[in-house]
Length: 610
Image (cartoon, rainbow, N blue to C red):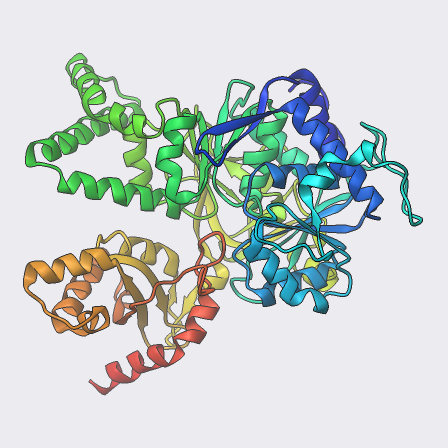
């Protein structure tokens, strides 16, 4: 897009809709399993009609409107309609517990909530009486919900609008098509509640200008345009997906296709054949592990061919990375390897993927290198909810693996005390909702936001993430241990799914380990290890010794004080459902430690008795 950035999100959408009225804006999977399209013009019409209905319901500029749903076209229509009339969106992850949802709705004083489906509707019904501000509930998919006058149907509101007649009951009159109240770029667009890995969630206030700056910066850096198709499967509550996978794509005139879910990604990419995908590292790791397992189970000749091809293609990448020439013989071998092996991996992703963006957490460098070798243009970015969210992201033409790239134009980054990353720029939040003291702690007098993340800038100006201050372990001997990189090394083992290190104010580091159940059961069968059930299997000395060897192999190069001296094997994994993972799949360290406090204490008692 050329020229000045519009002042509001709805205005930016309107501009692109006027340029591409008949082009597909959104695609979604219908009940028959086939994808259907919604044009920019049709999307705009639905937004206008719903905006008028919201006004008739008494929703006005500044009112908070929540969306408690998965993702998809209804989410987008609800979001754009509320933003058009100046309301402030409060997104709720569909995985939230009733208590967490109640806290957010009360803290933000939401007036209306959009809800998807019976399961989430039941959550709201259970807590509605404890949320005084909540006047309206609008249900996207009302199948199975008995009509009782306690909610409105989204379909009826989005189809009504101008045909609904004069407003009644003293409510404001409806908007005429295209009309909207006076909204400026500095007005709040959303309040996004942090995942709360270390405490109560904080509401991050982001303005229209914050989000527009980040969205347009992203589409410029990656030259996103009308010919692009984006596959969306992350929650739209996640600012990475919302800014980059929703707003940026719409503003560029690209098409957004919604996957049915993470479990259907492989089949959905075959139908959609996207050009751009955004992922969080854990999703990449899970898919890669599944593909790797298939390679390991393949016949010997095919397995050897894959490994040989990766080595050959890796040599070419290394030479290019160093600036060396690629000999003709190597180019010829790589052409064969690409045709026989690498191209088949790319075909799994639909065959048109030109950009794979990873964000939300550090991506394992070896995995990133392997994907790059196979011909995937994978780049990493760094950001936070408080920065709308992008701070840095690598560009395709200047991608240094192991870094998260350079800051967006107009965004400043510097390294402060204790290697803390400080950020300042147009994307920085307006503050935390109703928390002036917390806002003052986070943003200093010079306007620098203190991220709590640690990093360094390389010689080319790329940011390298090295850890997080709040996650730093300080042993009773004063030794400082960064757990995240160590955990990342440990879970590279095919036998270990999740790991959490602990050692604050203790003499040494211990770990909670969640094994890869399928691999452990296979190992037990191969070794003739009998057990009545899985929990008993994990208690067997042979299994514990095997896991201990895997941990030692992963941490062989660490200093003695960084090594895991004792560990416990857990049959139950850390998941969103048991509230031990955030909706963005990050460990809720405080909650995990609280839940397994007795297990951790026992590790130290057992070790110290020896």
